[in-house]
Every structure is written in structure tokens, then in C-alpha cells.
Length: 218
Image 1 (cartoon, rainbow, N blue to C red):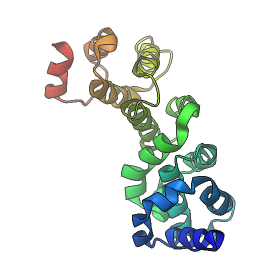
Image 2 (tube, rainbow, N blue to C red; image 1 turned 90 degrees about the horizontal axis):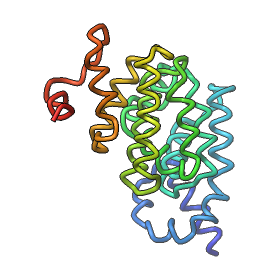
Image 3 (tube, one colour; image 1 turned 90 degrees about the vertical axis):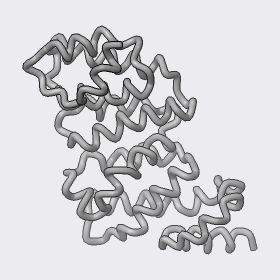
Image 4 (cartoon, one colour; image 1 turned 180 degrees about the horizontal axis):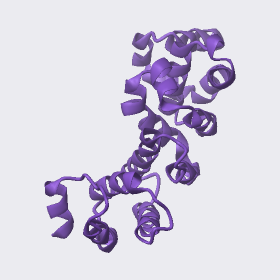
């Protein structure tokens, strides 16, 4: 009886019957059973999105990723990473701008768990769209806020990548701006020298604004 009830619950969630999300206790208390029901659906829709777009149910794909985030399902993390290599216009066309602007960073943060370092490869890959890479940076920040990863681990990573940009080992000014913005939210003491040096390179195009600049220099 419970199995049938959970099947119905998952089907309703994946058809965006938001009212079913009001039964949060039932979802959380049966997370493993629900994962077994929805995970094959997520896997199939992601595979379709990448290889057979005309066979994809985009509502189901969107909702199954949201459910993965809600369940903090680490098994879904690497599946979701697969779509990040797609062109941004494809992702926005079929999943919507809100997915890229808001949802993606939280879905990544809530499914990453101890696999968060995999986000570094995306952040540092210039072939991936800027907005996708920024979502990965924001996901790291969310993971720190949720006490899932150590703040210093993330700041040390940010500091290391900023030094690569400063030393011109990589040409990635766009990500420098995004990284600095996230550092400011995490308190930037450990990275002050790198941030100041970047602001001293006048050929760079770092658009943080005077308010944040004053904060950095205090």
C-alpha cells in the first residue's frame, strides 16, 4: 500500500503537482524508496535531453532535478553534471531562464555533498558557458553556508584560481569577477592580497562596483 502511495506521490511531483510537496515529512521519511522510483526517470530524461531531445519530457526532467535537490540525492549529482556541457541557449530554451538563474545553483549544492570538488573542473573549463560556471561557484558558496564543506577549503581554492589568473596561467577575467563576488559573501580576509592585485591590473575588466571595492580595501 505504501509503495503504491509513494509511486503516486512521485508521479504527481514529476508532473509538477506542487501541492504534493506539502507532505514534506512523507517525502523525507521515505527518501530511499522515493529515490528508487524517480532516479530511473531522471536518468532517462537526462539521457534523452543530451542525445534525443525530441523525446524529452522537459517538465519531468525539471521536476526530477528539483526532487533530487530536495532529497539531497548525491547519486543524482553526476547525472546532472552531464547537461552542463550543453550550449546555454539549449538549456534555457527547454528548461527556462529561471533554471539557469536560480534553480541550478541550489540543485548542484544540495546534490554535491562530498563530491563538490567535481565542480572545479566546470568552473575552470572555458568551453562551458559563463553562466553555468558561475552557478558552480555559487553552489560552492551555498555548500559553505550549509556547513557541508569547510569555508577555508573553498577560499583556498578560490585563492589558488585567482593566483592563476593574476600570473596569467589562465585567461579568465570573467570568472575572477564571479569568484570575488562569492568571496565577499564568505568574508574575504584570506584572499585580500589577490583581490587587491587584480584590482590593480587596470587592463582587467572587473565590474564589481565601488561599494564592494571599498569593502575589500577596508
